[in-house]
Structure formats: C-alpha cells, structure tokens
Image (cartoon, rainbow, N blue to C red; front, side, top):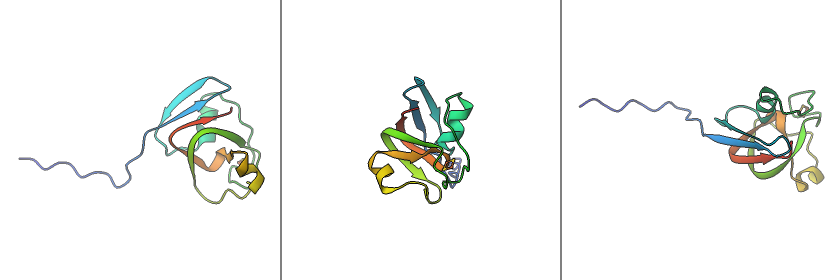
Length: 100
Ligand code: FES
C-alpha cells in the first residue's frame, strides 16, 4: 500500500475577505497581505510605507480577525479601540470584512 504523501510544512489556511464598500468578496489563502489583495482586485486603499509605520493604509475591520507580520507601529491605542487595522502588514484569519 502506498504511503500517504507528506504534508507540506506550511499549510495555508483558506481565507475570505469581504470589502464592504466595494461589495467584493475575495477568496484567498491567508498568506497575502490584505492591501495587496485589495490592489489586485481594484479596491482603493491608500498606502505609502507598506511596512506598518506610516498609518496611511489604516482601514476599519468590521468583522473577523487579522494576523500581523511585524509590529503595527502606526496603530495607536485609540485606533485599536475603533477597530482599525494596518492592511499593508496584515493577513486575514478565516473570514474578515473590511470597510473599503
Ligand atoms: S502603508 Fe504605511 S502603515 Fe501601511
């Protein structure tokens, strides 16, 4: 009996991003940044540093959870309380809805 193929070390998690203002729902693998997916899909999110320091790409997370790659330095406590995220360094976890 053949052995089952070994699983790849990093199994990407399927994710869905719903851009509420644009009315677009995008299936993705959770590995890409939300900003990159928005740009690819023609959803307008302004950006500048693309490294979490300037805050230009802040958007409101309406639903779900994101995972950051690096420190979201441009997020103040008040931003977090309002549910803002930095789309340039965040990945969707499961299903998320963004106000863009
Ligand atoms: S583009 Fe600067 S924090 Fe995202």
